[in-house]
Structures are given as C-alpha cells and as structure tokens.
Image (tube, rainbow, N blue to C red; front, side, top):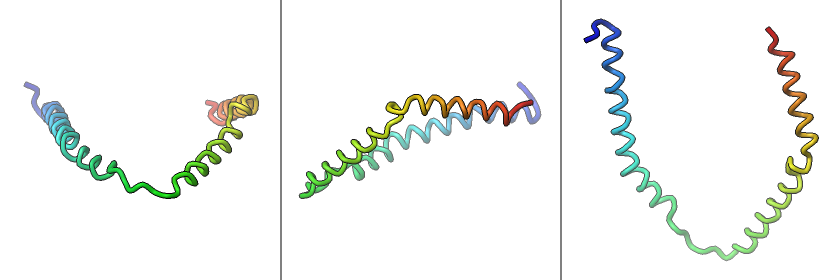
Length: 92
C-alpha cells in the first residue's frame, strides 16, 4: 500500500528475513551436523596422555597463581585509574 522507495524498502524487509531464516535452517539441519561428524570424531588413543595431562595441570596451576582474585586491590585500583583517565580524555 505504500508507494515509492519507502514501499520497496518495507517490502524487502520480510523477504530478506525469510531468506535468512530459511538459509539458517538449512545450514543448521545439514551442514552443521556434517561438520560435527567430521570434527568431533573420536581419534586414536595416544600414548602420552599422562604427560599431556601433567603439562596441562601445570599450566592451570600457574594461571591460578597469577589470577586477578589474588591481586584484587591492584585490579580495583587499575580499573579506577582507567575510569578516571577515560573521564579526562573524553570530557565535553
């Protein structure tokens, strides 16, 4: 009922949404499961699983030792400093 370029624009919105939803449905029902089948296939068991597990455990422990929860005052002061700096930089 709306004529001109506004009418064309309003008409194209539901068409684009419908095409996008149909393409999304096709991808979610065909391509994504196919990708999951090939990417999530169980591999051969490796012999060095224990070594990998120990290495991962060391990395997690090292990350936990330097976590922000142990330095919460430093993180809070740093955040406050950035907030103040931002206030100075973006004054009107």
